[in-house]
Length: 168
Image (cartoon, rainbow, N blue to C red; front, side, top):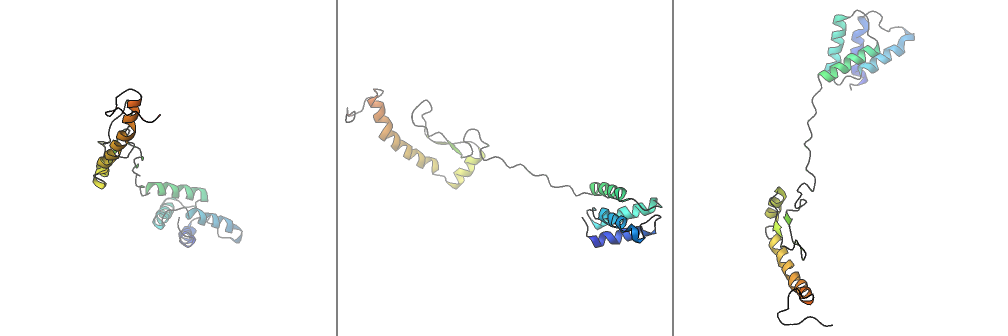
């Protein structure tokens, strides 16, 4: 939108046309023309519309017609808005949910150590923390050694090497 002063200057250019609101009782019509002119996106658009009206019409435009011509010119000369590139969601990798590493399950069918995923997040995580998976697997191995092997031996799944099955 342009300022009221710039709009008034462009409306003044229309004063040479027939039926332009000049009388004291027509101030409301003059105000409406100015408000319609303010809908122009830039002063250049307002100037172009007034020039077109003066070139092809002999009568002063009604505010609705002026507004319509301005909106048409606004759309015609609108600067295209930049297209927003959608940002990937935090969990765009279905395998690692964006963390960069998978596995680490203890017990069950999916019992496996941690490993790097093959997605972009994994490459970023490997760059930022190259020892992450190795350190996590070291902790996992301690947990397995301490808790899973004794449970398996008590359940009869795997006999303990020393024959110890816990205190009962």
